[in-house]
Length: 328
Image: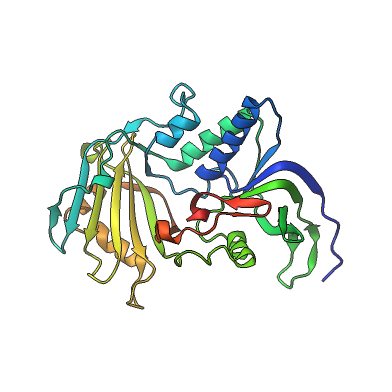
């Protein structure tokens, strides 16, 4: 491999890896606390997506308590939060029937909002930038930087490396971002976070983390079948009794509906396909009518933490901390 060019370095007080809700909220809060103390700090957020929100699977129910504490005037600031959660439906599905069940207490959504999480993240980014946070989308953190056993920042990946591992004519070295504190908010199973788990043995005093996969689609549906504020959750079919799984349908504004299916990755059947099970779910007699005359707008999938409180690792280490889904 050709000789490696010297990487440029940028200095910050805090570097945050990931511009999801946790990373952006942390950046905003840091600036708020510094302002209240009469101090000036430099905060940088790295986002691997081409734009903030690009890697966020939109369609979520937002419990607004944390947002009320972070930005109490979010409504006046133009937050894209417009659809109050209305009717809760919790159903047990068989192959042909949908049996209405009492909604578990923790799944009551009165006072919550149905949102596009991608839009919320883009709005949070605008609030962070207004406070002086520097946000760099399109740059993935590829390496943790150390001084001894202390984290001192991250470096972005080198560009212009050919399939043979050699530098091409377009080679550009990554950039080092040095920080007094580095916060990792890269989501579930982030590559840098996994290396930190090992280096600092952060998981030694907690249960193993367990995971699921969530598949989500955003649809524009027939206005006559659209019920703004409807929050639907189901368990049961097409999962068998040995497989963890369930669905959600959230009705947003603009005749849009977010539909998703979650399956625990500890399923025993090696031939089970989460994607195919999701398609089967959409053909259930109680679900299929929503999709008649509808148009799919977008889709995606992501890993989810399922281990609960007992699976949360030690969150701090010399020079940094884990936040958001990275923390479990």
